[in-house]
Amino acid sequence: MSYHRHTVPMPPGAYTDVAVSCASGQDLVSGGVADTAPFGDAGVERTWPTLAADGWRATIVSSPDALAGTETAYAICTSPPALGRLFYNQASAQAHGDVKSALATCSRGKVLGGGVDASDVGVAIGSRPADGPDADHKPNDAWRGTMDPTIGGGVNFQAYATCATGDLSHHLHYVHSSRNAPGLHLTSLTATCPMHTKVLGGGGTAALGHQLGVLHATLPKDGPDAGSTPDDGWTAAVDNESTTPAAMKSYAVCRG
Image (cartoon, rainbow, N blue to C red):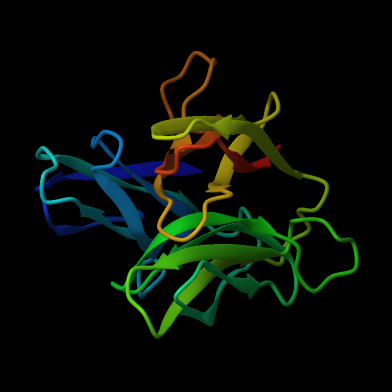
């Protein structure tokens, strides 16, 4: 596994795009995005694979009164055939003036990571592993993307899933952490991989109503080991713009 990042300036009042590529010959596993903005100044609009699935891209929207900062995209990549054959699915849904989810499923195999695209007319409030078409009722074969539209009428958006068909079931661990995100705060939460495993993907979500918050960041995280590679867990951050606490979760997909 290799972990890549790329950082760009993020001006106020703008939609800022950033992308990072895998090394030549590698397969994309997943990715994420983060920024340096404080509470209320920015939110994730997109975090998704590149068109050629050879890297990760993201868009963050910043408020007009935000301070200038930076935005970083992360890509987790692998050299085939370490994870078997990878394939990438997407699913579309339509929001009508309220929070809505789309579910990208793995028709076979297991989900390793995923993302969401709120399509310039909304913000992301969730991106996480989910249960899909298999019979085990475990969140290991689909990816759920949740968005909140910023305009009225029907708004199309997409969720994305990276799926692997290799015999990985006994090597994969799906973990999460939970807490309440206080009102009017930016809150971060990390799901830590079990010992002797490495993170492949992850995400986060919060129980936020329409126009009451936004996904602020979703990224791989370094942990307590001796190295500095962000391969030990996954951090999600949310802006809770309501005055009451909201339940939030971060998720990590890990491999032994």
